[in-house]
Length: 419
Image (tube, rainbow, N blue to C red; front, side, top):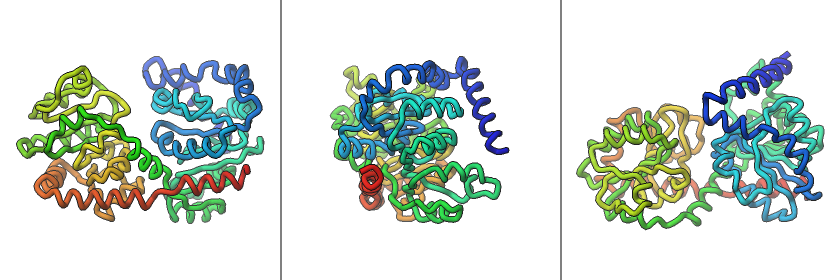
């Protein structure tokens, strides 16, 4: 019965997806990007493959792609003669990484209806399929199993409150049974899987650690950012939303005159919202687009990044980091800030399901705050006592170093599975 409900729900979801598209730009991109996709694949995909083995990597969105990128690139190095297919569910991944040079073909994943899954797997015919972190689509997994594909999940993490571990979660447990192996982030995940009879699981950790270590090696030098910072201290506010700025702006205003500058990188670029933030900040602010056009940012207090893709290179110019999302949808990536040796602070609401946040709080490299008063005290201490900030930052750096190596473990299993 649950299987029937799932199939009906997927059909309803596909209909609503198309119905809402004219009213939502992001959803519209996803609908438009899937139009005629299977027809296009049927007419040209095998010609592009030219008989090579196909490795399929699937990421829900941009964050999962960045998590999977070390494995994609390690696979390319190990199997240069294979064809790499990369799919996304969300436009926020596809639209930003559709030109990624590490894959041979990049497209949206068609909605998980039985017919779509059957046709997609028949056309693509992957020798091996990788699902990054989550994305457990029943029809695709079933068709991959019928196809004889080797199915891996990596960087996945499981929690007791997930439906797989509920008495009524039998259908959802069935989805997990299709995988040949899970590479998970911690022992809790291994134990939970074993409790429902899934024994093909091992701890590899989180491939994001490998990714962020590579980011440090390849981070761009940005002289204009260095000129903005000058000789004082600088806060990097990464992936922030309005809920974060409601806490952050009063703290920054209270620190006016403390020789602290801030670089603010919104999670989504909305001109009207950014204008509102600038009006509420006491100091002088400038947009990065103005700096890129030639304006000198040295005399400004706040630099607001109004583009996408710079954040990972900005952390090298920081002395401390505030990471957004935890007062709302969920904490964003803290590992990039950690690997650059910054002490990290974020909201105390929505971080508990992110293992790295829990770990760094326990170790003393990160701190969760409830409101602007707590944030101000934290930042003020770091400004007045830079040694405290450096000590917390060193903890962050060592934590990232200790977590690397997941990609190598995954590739060992790949070589055992496909030779």
